Image (cartoon, rainbow, N blue to C red; front, side, top):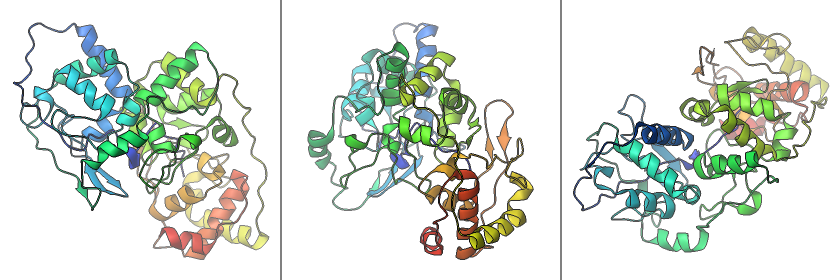
Length: 411
């Protein structure tokens, strides 16, 4: 029962930073005629982290950037591509111009890429930043790992159709959810939109998979853990301020909870490495130059019998880690008091956490959270509904309106 507010994706599960297939050039392998300045490589490393590249291009236990990360979608399954400088299986034969074209237009040297690779967001990346990331990747150790073609159903496996998708939906800029014109907000907009591609996961999508610009960052239904609303209003409704956001992005943990689901790798692989000024800028963009006041938790409403039943379950299976009064335990479990997941109007993520559990998670420094077991096999739909209503009404300020049918639908 942690806090999931994501910079990305797909998550993209969730829309991820995954190039769907490699697309090899017919040119000779690119060679360096001179040593690149160490500063350019370091800059590219920082930008690659800000762009969350590793989340989709480095599989657990695999070589860095060698691809293979699985990305499920309503249209089929994509696999992150190998983006090491291997001359056979990936970008070793690509020029900086070809790399930029892939990020900007979704076009590899020999094929159109699927928008599972978020070129819809990377399109707004500067050429200088694209070149720096390219130089950093070309300085990595080549990995001779073949790419895997996406497993898509008809008609989505007809790659040429993506050209028509681009004609309809590829835009030169992403819509904003906040307002302001400060230097911090301008920088934060670039970090969140172009590099971090937050909108790819946190914006609702239409029937053809296109982002709904009219509802930018208002949350989506992608994935098992759904990305929540991260507009200024959505964040304020869950009690967030600028300090909370900066702490969350830097460490993965704040007073509202900790990162889990698709947000955990975003923090671990990306946002924890951002400078303080960039963390401040990104938080400023998400909240706007004139942030709304965080909403304090108000008492929720629920049937007395439900609350009593939920309290019984809480003491039996939750209090040992989260504390008898929901105070949490450092390095073990987050506090339930004002927890962001409990404060979401949609109980989806809370129900999923109770059913599936939450994996153990390591964060910046020595911080960590122990695994939370799932209760799908030990608690009934009614018991879980009562528990959810006790948590939401008692510590989330939400109505106790979760039903057994809501739980059953997510089993």
